[in-house]
Image (tube, helix red, strand yellow):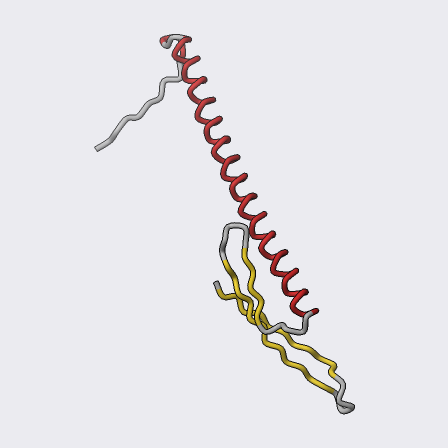
Length: 111
């Protein structure tokens, strides 16, 4: 079975009003698409800013915990009322004179 598909691009049989409406429809669809993409991009930027704020706050709390010599557990409260607990395990290595030369730290994030 053979099918014949043809496309008539001759505009002499078509009204200019329909061509104009087709153009308006195409512009409307593309505008909606661009606005949707812009909205999604703005939403992604806001989520990234919240994550950056979370890491900045965690970093400040971690530095404060080190200064207080109590780095075992650090809890923070985020803007959206989520609570995070950082558990810090500390290991140290010393040289033959007994001075600490290596300090190893590992963080575990628990929601």
